[in-house]
Length: 134
Image (tube, rainbow, N blue to C red; front, top):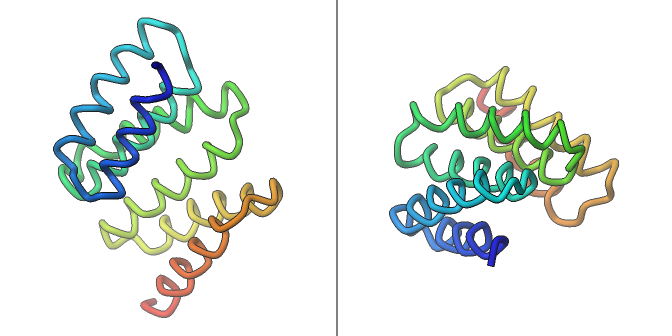
């Protein structure tokens, strides 16, 4: 049951149903804190931060930063790379190209080192677009 909140929240995010994603992930965070499941707590904070980039940009950063803190502590590198990329997208959304490039590059480096499929290509495209706009 515990991983389902993250999976369902991510599904809602991908379907662009931000209201359901937010509610699901907020409930998941409460459960993950009670159950002491740091991986899922970090994942849920990351996903909620990504939802909030589009819904309530001022509330997104604390969730993305909390995610990074938790995921670094438990050495969950693949999910950490997602969190760095998410923080980069937040900066991109706010028009902070240099910070966006910095965090997205951190995520990209981890994905490449771990040989994660698909994600590097996505981030490379985002970085190329950012650099073209500079």
